[in-house]
Image 1: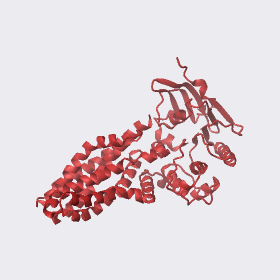
Image 2: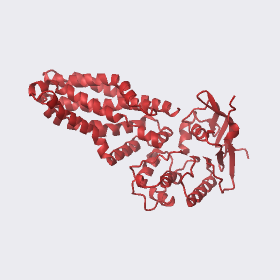
Image 3: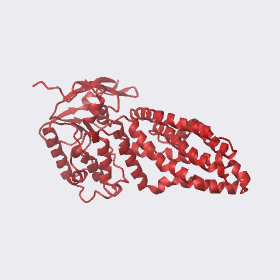
Image 4: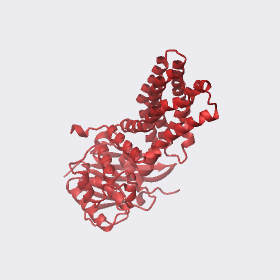
Length: 227
Length: 213
């Protein structure tokens, strides 16, 4: 019977990863957006390495944030339409755990690919070499925060027909600390300072989000369902 | 012969946007019962079933499982319940077998029947590894209904289970209900069709509609 005392985390994680694999093209679009914008910035701004290097960290972080925001909108939308969300709400497991499974799947399919292609973009944007490792670390932690916070917004707006704009307005203020400490990590490293403190703060943000966001999203979904 | 009812509903009322949908709904279900909820479109059949699952809160009245309020024994109640709603919760990009796998993995109680056998029994042999977007509406519903065969839950709540299902399918479902109640389960379903089973009780929800003042 031990096998059956499942938390629902693995089941939902596996299902969402499989779904993402079946819609590879759609799932890849945030990453493509991320890469397209980065190719355009040197063209629009300046191809000069010194000036581009100054803004590289901030630009990459802004694009990562926007790319995540694009994908977070659909986190619960199709589940809401086809009735799977209703099934999730009446599973006996504690709701935050299946939700954490879904959020993890979201991060693995958006945040992680963004993190992995970021050194390539750093190269295009002439990021000074000291910034690569901090960029990777800060994006890995930061995009996980973005997925978690975004899930709360997506849960709140899932029953609205056109919730996209409202979702952006809701989560944008919560994204600000992430982008501040994310860019600080990279620019500290570029300036030759110790970049671990801002990264540690980002880690603290992630720890708080992991603990609180699934609970908040679960509450939001219960409210949504009772309407 | 006094037996604690599996599920008892007392004086249940539901209001939406300050106007009542129904009130004073009372019935109970013991093991072996099939309860058919009837009523005109919009009389609240789906709402009543969703109240039973606990995803909606009634504005008055109680729902009790084995004599205990369902919010007091939430885990036990939800593990003993299976709800299949209007939407079959079938993911179009997954195959029938993959769909059934996650549905069963998230449910708490299931028996030893394999996914493949369940799909064969509901008439989807040969369709198990085709993405569901290539299947028909009736076949989607059959995928969802295959959960009935795998589940060990005693209470089945089915919202319009016969939608888009062909004649043989309807007969098969009714024989499933019969087997389920013989094993000591109970079925609460909403449908407009008359069932060919002998032990069906009917409850008309239109009679409980709030009078518009």
